[in-house]
Image (tube, rainbow, N blue to C red; front, side, top):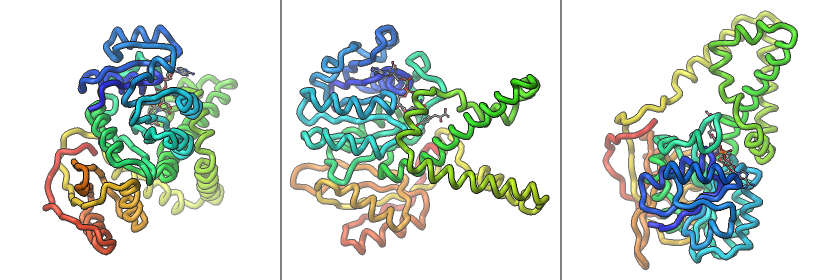
Length: 375
Ligand SMILES: NC(=O)C1=CN([C@@H]2O[C@H](COP(=O)(O)OP(=O)(O)OC[C@H]3O[C@@H](n4cnc5c(N)ncnc54)[C@H](O)[C@@H]3O)[C@@H](O)[C@H]2O)C=CC1
Ligand SMILES: O=C(O)C(=O)Cc1ccc(O)cc1
């Protein structure tokens, strides 16, 4: 277990992580922020042991550095860390909402023997700042890690364990580009749409205040995230440009089709639009706690070699096999490590056994079992 953790940026996410670390592990947490009052507040609520506005002081002797700053500051901070003496074997991670660009910057650190592992806890709020932080903010949410193919297995394991303990989230491993495509569709584009709708109705309101007065129900539900932090979302959009341009083109085309259906008075087309959405929406998982679900687990013997997690994940990803969880089991020197792979669907589990055996991996399949999970 690491002993000293530096959390850079004690806001909503950094503060929540720090609270979880202090509540559920025995580490010392040093907070870094530009805002001294927030550091004092974080110390008063027991989120950090010490706070500093000096980056070098915060990271000195840290076993793990968690960068929880706005996305636009993460790359710059990686550059600054690159010039500072960090502890040998230090693991640096971040919590930014986009991953590909940040992971590319992190390579600079890896060149120095430090391990950089991109991260993204998939929970949060439209609020920001330490005052909105909660130790259970990430409970039962997914927490994505995006190690590169060369990343040391032991480092991924160490960080996953620490974050799982601190957050009670479900750690998953994903390729950073894949992450940006998915999160672009389910989080970044919805934030653009919400803000766009709010701005549109805001403009209409200039002429008639009833636009605001009557805005309730669906409008409020759909636009809650339209109140999110402008700087944060500016940075998110500018670091996921390629995916967002593609997604917005697709969105505009789809809206044009709905427009045509209305224009041409095409009831079937309009009805189909809502029927399909209703069916898909009703199948979205609820975030309930502690229900029992079927899980299929298998164990794969792997050599403790850089890149092995990425290799296994890519092999399965290429065959469109979805892993629900990937965990690195104990491994000692000279003894091959074991990856524990969990699947939600039996078909994916069966296909994974076949694919891995075809690729000459030794696979142990576990009986189907019920597991208390978050969905
Ligand atoms: N808000 C959300 O729901 C989620 C946010 N994220 C990611 O987490 C990161 C942090 O976001 P939040 O915690 O929401 O933001 P926040 O605004 O609550 O916290 C950011 C903290 O960084 C500090 N800070 C900003 N610039 C600084 C600088 N130049 N030097 C030192 N300190 C500085 C601020 O004073 C603040 O305390 C972002 O990269 C975001 O993409 C990830 C998941 C969810
Ligand atoms: O407020 C909400 O519902 C969110 O969408 C929270 C959120 C914001 C950014 C992220 O990268 C992940 C989660």
